[in-house]
Image (cartoon, rainbow, N blue to C red):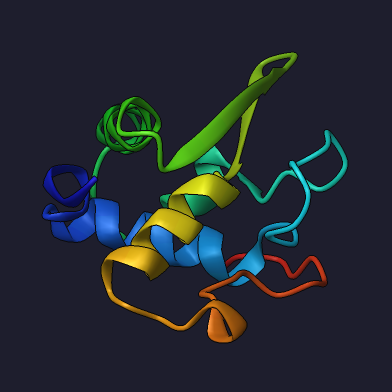
Length: 107
């Protein structure tokens, strides 16, 4: 996980998803998927193919989930990854790192 997040652009993409994805207690459903690949790459000043590469690396590391919707790929955080990161950093159980409970649009 840390290898994937060591890249600054991947860390930005992951933080964008954390800020807009579904509640940690549930798996992401089709309607709750955090954001489309194109939206996640906005303002990063990197090619779309590079954004796709970074998203694939985050997925391989188990940090995010991906779902194809026609020509679009939607992404959201993996709630298990958030829990593992919280445990690693010693966040008490009652203060688990989590995404907001409401869907917000990533920009």
